[in-house]
Length: 252
Length: 211
Image (tube, rainbow over all chains, first blue to last red; front, side, top):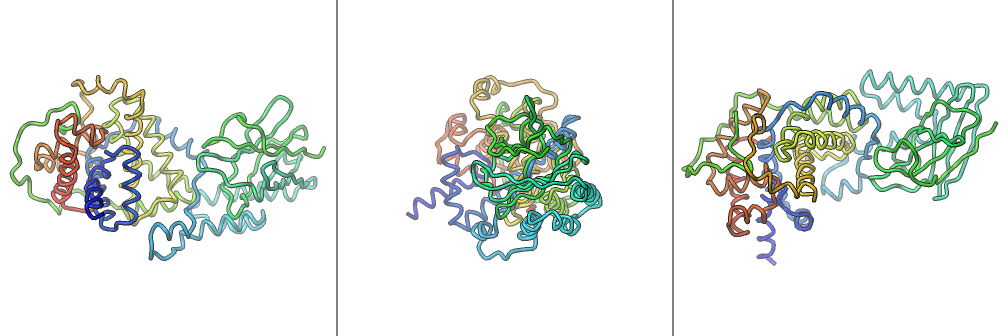
């Protein structure tokens, strides 16, 4: 047993340089979780590898930045690990504000559009983001305040419900959901406006927190549309690739 | 500033005796990882301005490293885009207890580059790549900061034994697994493991800092 762990320990350098194949990497990572001394070693050696990487820094190609920023704007982010999972990973570490705050924020926002308006103001961290959120909140408020505003609910074939507040006058809708099954990291719920022979992408649902997704605002709505939700890979797609788990017919 | 490393180079046969002295007080400005942590925390909340600032700080090192491993500029650009998107997507998963933001991002970059180079299509032209390829830009660190890093890393790599240096550069800059390194260098597996480990420790001491 001692001999075994010493032999595994010798892999720390190769691990820090990504010089293990997948199987051996996985085995070493299991060992790492039980071996604080190895974790220290790996951390030190990974920092040394970082110095080797910094020595290679080069000017990225022109245009890459714009593409990355545009792609990021359309790519949903992973939620933080749950406090329980974080605690498992790092025993003895106390929860910090950043651990619970985004989750709390998300959960509250999902509780209602009105709550989202208040919370958005609390959570924003830069003026730019503040402006974006205010603009979105104004649009949400405009839909809610529209004289023709209506509420429609629907049930997903995979479980869970959706609530849509819509206004044809504003040509917008607000979509929220509750109880949709959690998806694997590489998948996302995508919202669609469906009309005969066409499906227009209407946004990606944020990762649900406590089963609820924060409101998504979609524009360009007409009375000929239905609202659909599909499960799509990663950053979403431009047309549905799976059968909708939910289709809602809208009132005339 | 070129670094005589990478799979296609034979490192000159100079036996190391002690190597250069550690230089804990570099003249380079300290890398402000607190600042990066702050940016990353904002990115984790979906702040796109913070992400742009983070891109400006990390894309150069990420692209340079990926290109060092992959060689092909078009593939390197593609992989760098994936890496930066992963930084955006997984910002909330960054754990300061396991290293600096720079180390976190460059670990993602190296892993992606290595995955790509080991994938089947890449493996096909791998053998061709191991022949010397004339290249004006490949090993050149292009930014001022990088050239200072490059100078120090080059000096410290020269302080290793030849076997340590070759094993480390083949593994890290070449993207080879340690069994592949053992085959290339015609030494036993166990020898490669320990040379990489000892060499990295010595390299770290020579670089004389932890960041």
